[in-house]
Image (cartoon, rainbow, N blue to C red):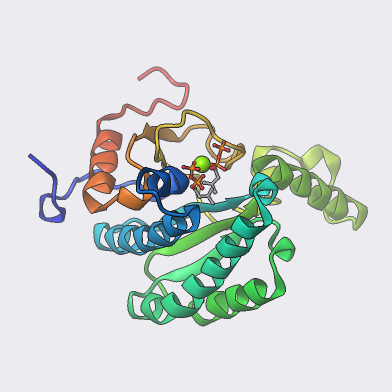
Length: 242
Ligand code: IPE
Ligand code: IPE
Ligand code: MG
């Protein structure tokens, strides 16, 4: 029987991270341009945010554009950036209505100026909201984040704020883009690929993985609930004997 929101799973992850993949394949299957897949993918973002809000998820991190995605054809990159700006502009009023707080991680300065401006405007506007925290990973790479973290650590040492002997995993976490958020409990990847593609390498150490064949534009509330249900069946041991 298909799951519905009325039939809510009980063990809700506090933080869900999603590798939103398969937009291009979705479009190709329909003989449409890849950008149409991205446009439909943006609609899925809205559906998934609504569902996470309803279910009481606290943090949702979405991998929207990777460091490596800059290698795509210029036209596709431009279309994605335009879509991002449009998404932020048109969806910010909805985020206000739904009490969603927007955040972003990644090398944000690499984004086109218009995107950066809109992003900062949306982050600022939603900063007092207390519901779901939506974190967009943009121009994000896990290795780049770790390198930036090392630089930030060295800076703190140089300025005399930190002693080398004090560095441990807790301290290092505080130098990552994600320093304000807990690690993800559940990672979802759509479209069946079994890899991390440079996503949250540090933070996913003990995250439960859920891979679905469903392509991102087709992913809906039911799929999210199925993922959360599967998560609820997992036995998280964190290396201990249980
Ligand atoms: C995910 O869909 C969106 C981004 C990476 C920006 P893809 O564009 O990777 O879709 P496929 O993998 O080619 O189907
Ligand atoms: C990962 O998907 C990046 C995003 C979803 C933003 P890709 O489609 O870029 O990953 P690969 O190239 O298949 O590993
Ligand atoms: Mg892909």
